[in-house]
Image (tube, rainbow, N blue to C red):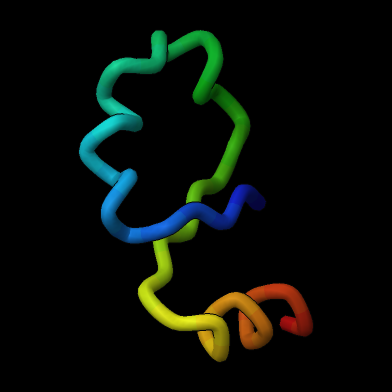
Length: 40
């Protein structure tokens, strides 16, 4: 799982599909969201 700022979500489209393959991206706006994902 890769955690990124919500404002960078549009940039993910620039990555080739073979790079994104097998990865799960989570986009967050607040630090508490990061903690929730990290501890899940």
